[in-house]
Length: 248
Image (cartoon, rainbow, N blue to C red):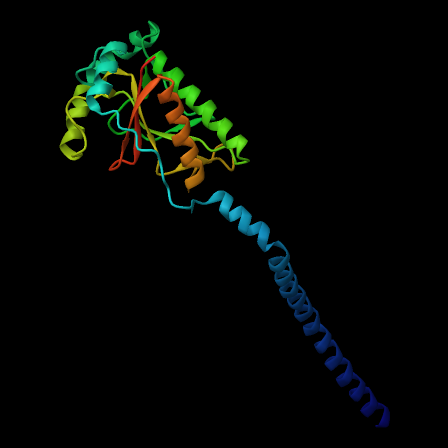
């Protein structure tokens, strides 16, 4: 009887011990995990904040750009002198663009390390070779200014290029700032946004950033080319873009 009681007592204590041990281990793991999460958040918050700013849109400072005032008649004069004959309709554009490219009268403009061609609703990504060269030289000059100021390599955004008479007419119906006669129809003119620039945290990613200092440097680069007699420029307030036409 005595041995039987001791055996039952032993079994009871052993069961309680196993029960405590069984629940102690998962609790210990949960505690370790919780402590690890807290430690990581403390140690790596600067890194995570940096990654967040790298991959998401941001703004920095109040954007101020130079107000260039070469108005429409000046752009038209140079566009007619240096450009191609306007396409009347979108159908005519698609019928003739291959021959225009083949004869080196127009070049297709695609995004590269200097600039990004945004989604175009009223224009086509083509320019005369002279205008394409101006676009490339502006990109190089902007990049050098960024490097000289220790800034990351932003790209600028092109919002409009070659338009047909048809697309310009349609645009003028919805945009009070647009006229029926524009230098965009001659392949000599492009618009560059000053609302934002683009950073590329990864080669396939494009993130818009309202970096006021970088946009000011872009404005200065455009002004230098204008003073050198290579282009005429008007700063458009409503569309927030530089309207640029090649001169030479």
